[in-house]
Length: 226
Length: 232
Image 1 (cartoon, chains in turn brown, orange):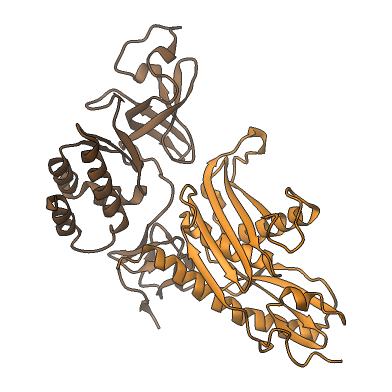
Image 2 (tube, each protein chain N blue to C red; image 1 turned 30 degrees about the vertical axis):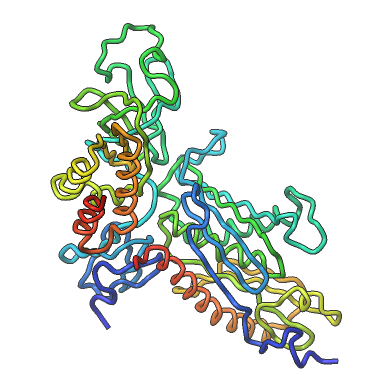
């Protein structure tokens, strides 16, 4: 038997046979063994032309150049900070990459100290492990107050929606200021605690039901519900 | 006296009742529980994350680190907490049983930590631990070529049986216990240990039985993993 064995959007676990025969090619999250294509991860089957992909449902963040991420200062060094952005390796923020001008030999913890949370952009990634960040750019800054929740990085696009449709809806519905980092960290700040709780509930619901259809309507109802 | 009937009334090729659940530990990257009869194993996976101390890092591939432990209340006689000769060995064989399916090349300089805790023991704990750990690894989103399912087979008296319980392991006329871990899809063996005596022919028969049960365990693992992401 050749062709697809499992349909698109079906949940697969590692080792599941997705397709058979040479008509299909393995993409991310899939591999070929002899004639067949198997899943490498727990995720959803996705087809792109002849490419069979598995979109992971769980897992760590893999940094990409240009991603906006939310990170926490884990170490202050000489001339740079180490930032924990939730991937397997720490990212580096050089002192030249901050919006402020910093004198040589200045005490860096004066600017960003341990456990400070920042919004930064990934500028360079070498083999997933040497990650460099910058804070020069619009909206890149240190953040104060509010709360941070963790979601699965692969579900970030769903939370943001097409051209930010979903996230704008939540922002309007709850009146909160929300920043979604590509690394799955979401910063929520509202005037009232109730607003923040509401926004948290909505985002966690999107995360939980991200692979279902008609999600926008469900969320709309949920936001209008009170 | 030959062993004609199993002590708990099961058939010779019948396994105890199995149950699996995924996502039981909130703060872990992946977690799972596997129960077979009265044996319960919990597994938690953390990582891939940076490995310290640095000299343990491997710049070519990631490191898999397993830790098997029995809770002090898991057995009838209180087990002294902490690592023992036995738990160190089981940690090592578990690591080797799982390492062969994981794509560690993707994460140089990092470690994937697997913690297995047995909260209730009635024989077959290392097998339950491996089955749980495989689910936890999949739940953590770690790329794996296949799942791993494990079961113990053996010989009690003169009969080949599957999934021995504690009473059978201690059978007075001698019992052989063979824990087997397999990759259910490709049918490769990743763990094979033996305590006791068995002939070549009997071993072949035992492995054949183990293979059948491993695919049963695989179905349970699969359902548990899918259940976690099902939306009602």
